[in-house]
Length: 265
Image 1 (spheres, helix red, strand yellow):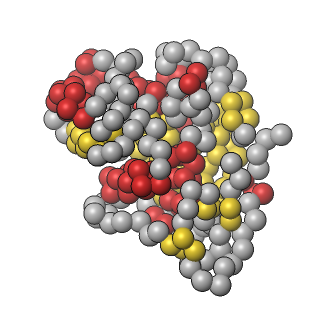
Image 2: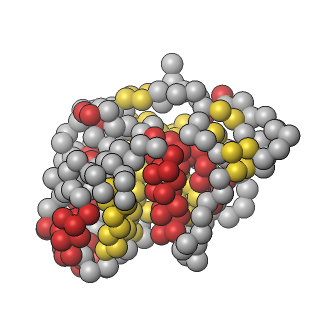
């Protein structure tokens, strides 16, 4: 059965509620489908602020599906739970080709990041067609490879502002792609865990030196999967700082005074 985001049950607590891993804040959430130019149907979810201006749009690219990555990978799930309400940010999550989650299974098969170029293009075009403003790619692990390989090339480059990368392994993405980002001049924020399994901060700084505008931040104590509320919260704050002008240094609230729901994972 496909998960329906309208199934969340919201209640009004008598006092402000601490925001925890399973806390869901109000938003307009809908199941969506993306269509790729080679004919695949990709399943996803769009979470929008309930009211007010949409200040930015995150187009999220998930970790490696052959190692458990999907649109519900925890940082992206928490982004969709929180950022529409806390920061006025729209969050688009989707399963790349051949990937399954409670939302459903996307058509096609995993293509080692090659055919997934069309998935990235479809997601960006969906956001454009919906009129979602200030569009940013957010890649995590395998998703950073997709962002780096395809984000600075057309037809994607002219439709996004920049990208935020979480735990880039730089396996598939090469110096050629980094030089494309350098030439494009678009912002690139790179969050690198101190204890990453693939690329740690000093090595990341050396590799990303090819991109003059790249901001590489090592995160003390963090690991590749950003496990723990401390690290997930840090990631969300860094994303908001990057994608909303004037928000630098602002810390997202850790309590919510309003209706809340609880996700069952």
